[in-house]
Length: 505
Image 1 (cartoon, helix red, strand yellow):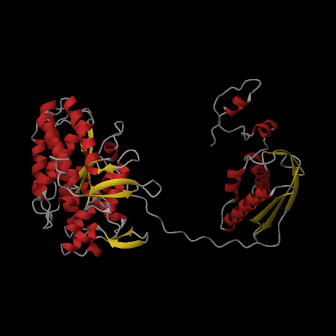
Image 2 (cartoon, one colour):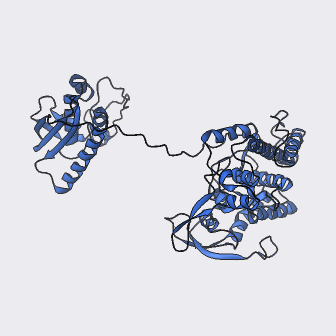
């Protein structure tokens, strides 16, 4: 890597896994980078062999520059400049393309992400010129990755929560929303200005935007509001743009992990600490990078990075949405608190017993009833069933009884089990209302429906299967049920029977 930004960078070698189930592979990355970056590097590299970050970066950057020259989108000097800028973004952990570009997946839609906290300086300020330059580099790279044909690019940023914490701004505050709006406006203005420069060489395909929401007049980041307005005005003064859309926050992948971003897009922080596994395999709680950064600047990390309500994220999205070309990804689903279960229905000594013979197998179904006459529990046994079948049947019956005890409607069980296959099927002897069944469970639950639901309605909803249905393992269809207009042959073959289609409403 002599003559590149990687020259003189000390690397450390280790074994890393893309996920806990993947095989470990040798990786080499800058010595100061954490183990999570090694795992991300293992996920970004195709194959299962050893991988070095400088070589892997050189791979996709080299392909990108070669494609740009082939398409006459780059000359020799422009290619060298773009190559150096992309290498620097990766080394400084400021920006990188998505995983598809690293893995050389040309059919996947490319994306590029900028890591916002990486643009902070030692004093806690935000490097506005470097950020605008990174946006321009990303737009040029995405244009080449899409062969100069795409009207919409996917440029985004990550770890807004980490940036706000380092600036001392609570996520759920007007000051944070103003700063985020100015930052997003700057990103859009710089991206459209870069698209306008490409249009000067390749020809415009979209008119410049003359009207846009005015960003906040001021924010907590010095110079950011003025830079945002200037970038938007510069883009508006251009003769046209190469792209109709540029700024889109996309779901995260391993690229964010390589850059060290702890949250994606607009997502708030989950807390000031995280659990990591030490060399001995034990989990230990450690401060996040955002917490360490905020504490080093004298800000209270515990309060700045505390979880926020869903309304705070919605307010943040509303603040930046006018400057995005596409809606932000939906927030990750959060587990809901468990709902209290209703008390079990007490059983009484009352109940019923049915004994039938299904295709020569004796079957016994028993029930116990609640004081109101409803079904409380069931029992099901066969005279000649094996140990494995008996164990499965007992477990199934136990699960059904748990559901019944906690209010699960019997009709739901009947709907799920009726006409199911498994075990003996055919003629039922000893039950005047059910003459045929496709399985033991089919007979048992249709029998329960007749006894504990509306009997006439149950027989209408779940009629007996025909002899052919029992022979071929298909469920009957009510006469009023919608069906596809398929005419069966006079003597249906097994293949023809399998091709019978029905719409179940």
